[in-house]
Image (cartoon, rainbow, N blue to C red; front, top):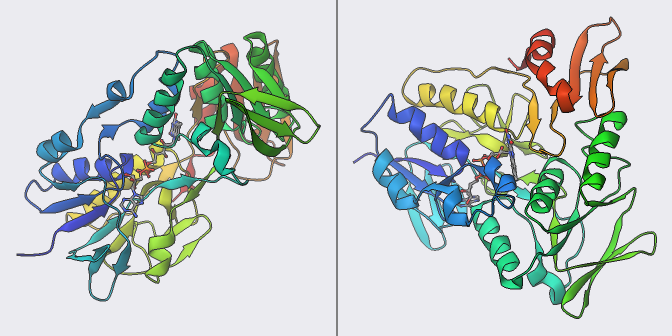
Length: 387
Ligand SMILES: Cc1cc2nc3c(=O)[nH]c(=O)nc-3n(C[C@H](O)[C@H](O)[C@H](O)COP(=O)(O)OP(=O)(O)OC[C@H]3O[C@@H](n4cnc5c(N)ncnc54)[C@H](O)[C@@H]3O)c2cc1C
């Protein structure tokens, strides 16, 4: 029998691809190997669960067993691929060797933690990047039996969403980041400032313009020491300081990788014929967006290619919807140099329009009531990112 099409990973990229492929080919043998539980869940919902006090099982739409049944695949959850041998067309799981027909690497991205976590506080310091992480953090919150004091390090999309969500769930939140305003890569300063004001008004404590110096144990608390000499006391610490594509397997197998991910062309093919990469781990024609919309477009194109119709992916720039109900924000970050930002609106309802030298709209950011303008503005902004 032919070796199966094999996917490494069971996140939205891998499962999205299998769903697309099954609409074209119901029979092809497919094996999914995943380091995590293999449950089908929507990762963006992880930063909305604490406000609604959702236990982890409510976030999983289907168990790995149900996924395998429904999609007609062999699923190997809690199994880590340790090596790929492109010339033999095999992969290793420890001492076990498995042949593959074609291979798709969908290993996602891992949290980047830019400081040491001392052993003595390690059980109280978390990142949340998958359902298993959510399970662990949820269990730690529950074990306190009371509202927690959580220090969040990092004020990007993930840090801000968890700050809003945990605060809405009744927990005390301190948000620490070196930048002057929250969401620095998505919102120009005046808009970041109004988001910060909305956070402060709801009781979230902001420590902006501050670096974490060290984490320490202080009785049952974690002492979060900042570079201005302040010490915050927290029951738990959540680190949200960015993600880095998991390229190690590919790099060790000799595939072309960069800091932005596994290099693939617009057919999602790596430098090695027969091996593809998809989702947060893939840098498609020089762009790694790390959002759902581009990975869905890529999954659709790759499914067509794997079913025998070579297809190139293309996708536009899309507005990012930030899940901060305290002050809704939308951003379409400019992909070209900005000559000027034009700020319109008042109070917390602001629109920042990024213009190129020739006056053309090349991106925008919106807060409060102005988020209504997203469709109109997205139509006016440049359409293509990968083309
Ligand atoms: C809190 C949060 C909120 C988000 N909100 C949004 C949003 O609102 N909108 C949006 O567009 N995007 C959002 N994103 C980003 C989006 O969720 C991701 O782009 C997307 O889920 C990535 O999917 P993936 O399948 O590429 O990676 P992952 O979901 O990370 O999956 C990677 C898979 O690879 C497996 N794996 C890794 N290494 C190995 C190995 N060696 N062997 C076997 N398996 C392995 C893992 O176990 C996992 O199954 C959010 C991200 C986070 C963290």
